[in-house]
Image 1 (cartoon, one colour):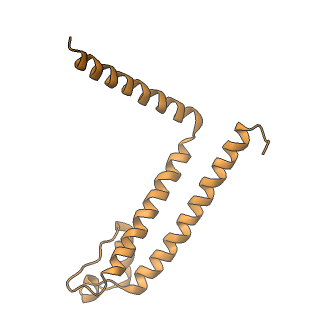
Image 2: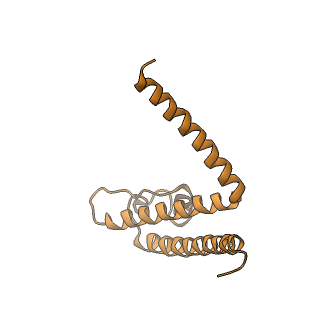
Image 3: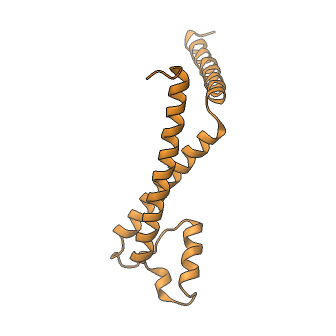
Length: 128
C-alpha cells in the first residue's frame, strides 16, 4: 500500500475517533439544554442580521422583506391581504421585532453565561 494512502486512511480513522470522542465528552459535560441555548442564540443572531438587512434596503425599489415564518404570521395579522404594504418593509414592524429579538438574545446570553459560571464553579470546586 502506498504511504500516502495509508496516511490518508490513518487521518480519516483518527478524525472519526476524535469526532466520536469529542461527542462523548460533550455529552458527558454538557446538558442538552446547552445545545438548545446555543441554537437559540444563533437563531436570534441570524434574525437580527435579517432585520438589519431589511431595514438597510428599505429605500431600494422593488425590494420585498425577507421574514421568518413567525414574523410573517405576525405581519399577516397586522396588514390586510390585499394591501400593497405587504410588499414593503415596515420600519415600525422591523424596529419592534428587532428590539424584541435583542431582548430575547440578551436573555439567552445571560442564561448561557450562568450555565458556564456553574460549570466553572464545579470544575474549581467552588474556588475562584
